[in-house]
Image 1 (tube, one colour):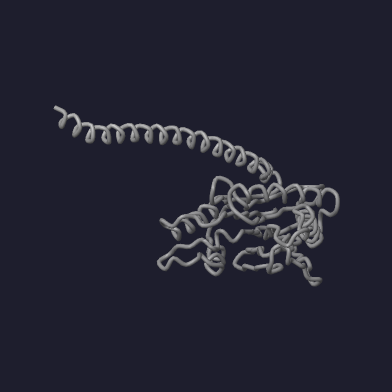
Image 2 (cartoon, rainbow, N blue to C red; image 1 turned 120 degrees about the horizontal axis):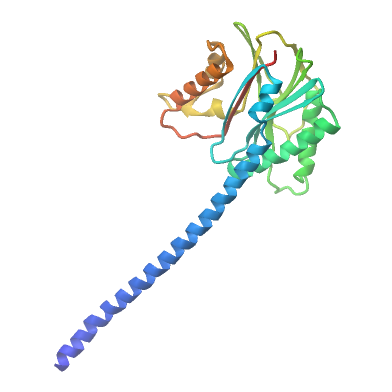
Length: 292
């Protein structure tokens, strides 16, 4: 009996200790899972709120309908929120519109869009509302000030690619861009206006003295298209290459749509067919419109 007692103690105690340790670990895992679930819920609630805030600064469909004869918008953040945006203001006989691609994705990118929105509003209401070049230069200057650029060499270098267009009396459009082009489809002709090759707001950005507006008359049936690089850089196809500017150019050129909604369907179908099962790699925004 003494030998059995000693042997059973040596076998049972480690087993009992292992059971107790396992139960303790399971409790810690359960508690940690509950804690992580609560943290995740708070984060997602905050992101959902950020999404509502970002969507509130985008022009509504009714606002765009009141300004343009026809239009369509494709706005697809890579995450719940993103750094791509479109922006429109009507002041008197002038319509000012912009399409931008801010540094970053997700929440950081969305915060940048709100900052740019506020800066643009201050510029067009207090400095200039009908000269894209001036608006672009002021945006570059004020963004650097707002983001404390130049104070430290190790500060985050934030900025954006952007196009500014001013439409005067629905008869003339002025364009100035920073790394975002303006496509104008007039019947069978397609013209591309290319702006400055770099973004604005960055440490190294120095807008050239030769930066000027491109001014064009608006004719009946003209279609104007602005896009960030998200559509163009989306990978897919047989070789998993980016969609590319040439393919985007041909998409516009070969579009047979008789309305903006039909053209939007063509664009979305072409993108989805090219992507197939590839995940979206960047934020996407496309704004197309007809003035009159």
